[in-house]
Length: 80
Image (cartoon, rainbow, N blue to C red; front, side, top):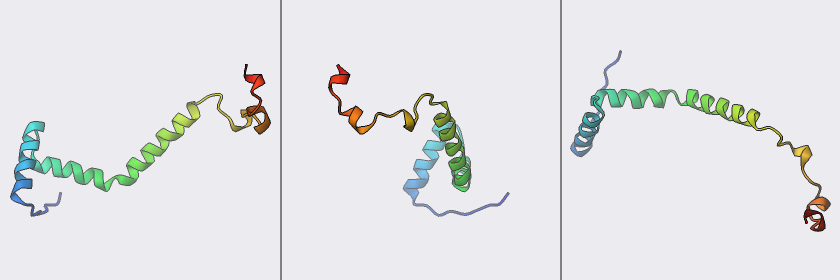
């Protein structure tokens, strides 16, 4: 594990300490979590892409070949 030093304004540090206390965590844990998410942006993209594919695959009965032709879509009598 590596140590890093970060300089932030006093207001930011106080706000981070308060947020960490409310979450029952340390400022270090919050920063570590943020950096882990930042470093894994490709993983998140792949996860969302896979989720999108699953959703598309679950949609039944929606196909482009089932659409009405231009003429059919303008036949108002057929809609009544």
